[in-house]
Length: 63
Image 1 (spheres, rainbow, N blue to C red):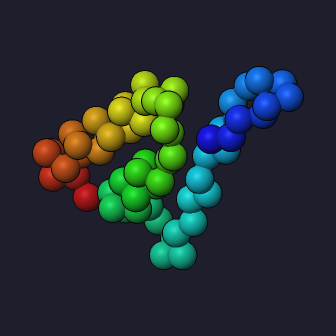
Image 2: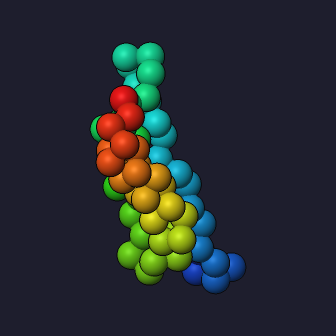
């Protein structure tokens, strides 16, 4: 997350998701979700949803 002092606004660039194995795993998705740097908490409504989704997948035993 970056702050533009001249325009007084925040910008966010999501982390790149790169998986050389050709498919996404729960572990790689969780790693991406935790790579988001959000010190102010502006993105929490979105990151919490991703983490809750992954939690239900682990509880169901989905691979």
